[in-house]
Length: 169
Image 1 (cartoon, helix red, strand yellow):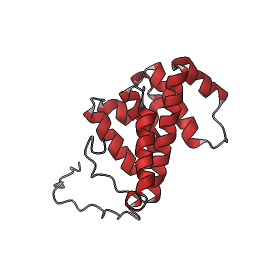
Image 2: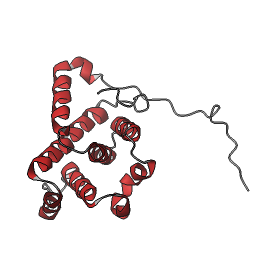
Image 3: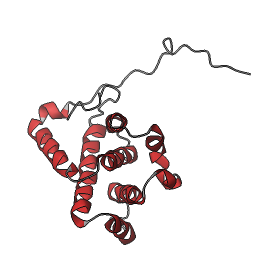
Image 4: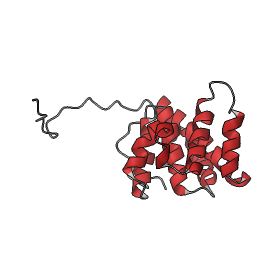
């Protein structure tokens, strides 16, 4: 039987890759506009739902920085580790989420991926059954905004691991 005996203090991890560009520093007006857009998009949305959507879109887009940020914010707000861990396989773990959350996650995937060039009617109709029009508009805005943030994070190679919950609020 093999036992893992490595002391975590002595394990040598891969080096952190440096950011390619501090885009917010070089495009401060764009950054401030993104903050305003993000603030506007979250209005009227349940905070838990908002963080689940942000984590899931960030997983799809492979944005490690945003996964780190929104996972920490969700945990700090009282979200369970189990529900966050299951987000990557939410369709197989439906019993962890409400029907409304499932509709939001399904819409998040459809808006984020867009490989067929559109959001399927059945996905939109399902979301429309669970959200009033104003709330649905806010949800679509929130999904769109996190996708924009993900593009900055992935392109500029922003490093995860340094964010503290609530740091940018």
